[in-house]
Figure 1: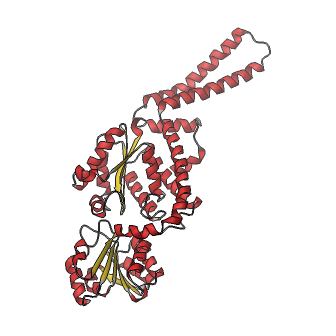
Figure 2: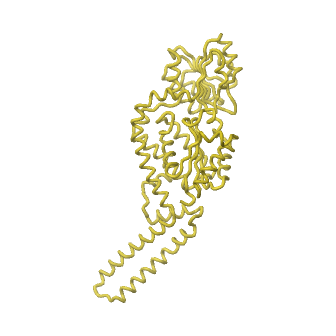
Figure 3: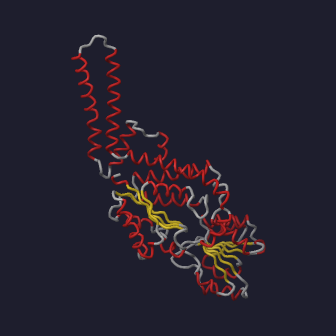
Length: 433
């Protein structure tokens, strides 16, 4: 389809461990530069990046999907300083309809560790907005991503999958319940008060945690979340001072390095007189050095350890997921029809056929109103209407042919189909707003 072959290459929680996912994560603030480098990859006409705690995926459009399937893994490897060999066994590649289906399923949270969890859609919207702002996305990815957002909305409204979902934060609190007999007797320390931190704080509150502390790089945000918890806001620079007070530490913030290292945890354990401390690291890249697990009385869990908790809660959501998958298939079909309509040749044919049908209908109506006409008159009127149609169509058809297989083809084809109502579904208009 010209410049519109769609390819998605990535890895997720099922194909790669957290150690590899964190190495490939595109950190906040680095998206724009990464997108510029993506657009510099040969054959990439449009591009976007989806990077969350459970997945890293690159979506691209280009004239040759086969070559994109080769160049995109190379791009990921170069971008993060890993070898293609190290990535090979963990990557998946989806092309064409499969790529569209995968993106729709991701937006609808059907491909998440926690089916139905709501956070992924917000992350996708932010990251697509970054691609749009950087000029990396074009007509096709604009439509594809916005359609994925509307698919997620349909799934949420038409199935019970969201009602039966749990968040990563609630899975972490469920794990904490398994660790402790009574959360009411424990003190929790939450490292990070962003969206994930706030959601986890709410789960801690509903789980009946005895007391809580919240620390965040922006202290005002820590104060706000701590207030909802009825807890204590801790200045970021005083994290080590308050660590010994915590029985449960949940890390949701990440940075260029570990926020909690062996020395800090070891010092906290001495002050706790070796009373056990449990740490749950939800961040990617991870916020807690895995080496702390070697310390006596320290028990560290990372995001991959939550999968056992999630599996136990999958039954009810799986039944709703069947309905959601049917919605996804319907929307993939609709998108694929739209994408096919962007090719100039079928649009030119459809436009000629529609105008010719209108000409013939009007000609027959005119001739029916003239009871006495000679064959010569009929032929003259026919030539006149054909000539008028050709002159009217000359401009639009010339534009379509001139821009065929060019970067502006999609714009001109879509404009022609909308202006002349060539099978465009009016309900799709909202996706472009």
